[in-house]
Length: 309
Image (cartoon, rainbow, N blue to C red; front, side, top):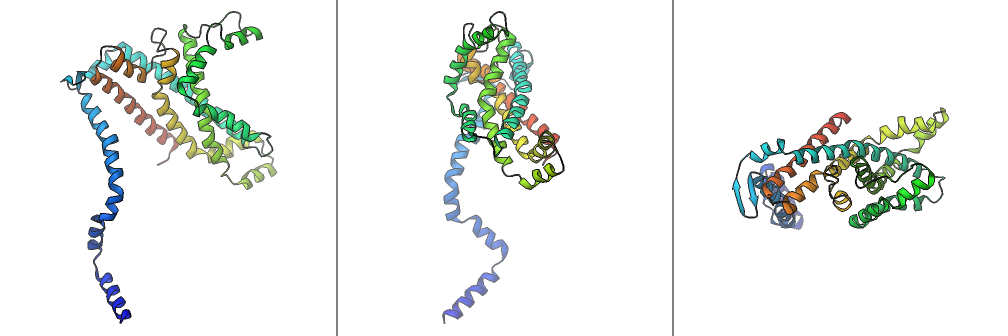
């Protein structure tokens, strides 16, 4: 009897049309009960703020006292010298710092991937440790290190590399250099971990074959390691680009955009527009979408250059 019931049940399942099964699956209460909390949280804390900030960018004013101005905030961008300065400073940090950090991360990960290197765990931890350091704490530490009578100038004077103390905080060029050094010190270890994990997944027989053929370690690095790390390099390049476009903490805590806005970034300018100057949340939202625009454009360009889908 049970066998007949099972047979009848199986035959009924086989006769159920595919569209009916997909319909019932779409309205499956158990499935939606698992997904619904995540959907609500994403809509509440991600989709709604994006839509609200986009609508806010079409207004001018502060708080709830705003008026609709349409695209006038976009027109204001091109006539705002402070915005143009912040944009140029951000791109200087991006163009200089990201390639240096990527190359340095590749070199460090290649060195720390050597099996005969002693204290590998210690070196990996020491290089990665800045990533988990408090942003405010390390920014204040760098500010004291790069002061006129700080340890950096004292060391350079003692070694005879410079004849007088470098004005890191007051000179526009050296202030940018200080910010670049700080960002590189913090995020190099972060990218190094990605490269190190990817290198450990490369088949060792490839290097053994290259070694038998007499390929030097340098050529192995550029013609074997780097090509095989192409997806990881693409990922870290995009993430580093987005992170540099959003640089805020280092500049805020070390130079506050000075001297004379020479280290002002887009993120710090958004903060100033919202809380420091006469508040204009609508214009600040417009500037924030400039970061979104350039992050998307640069990510697409990097995908195109890498020829990866």
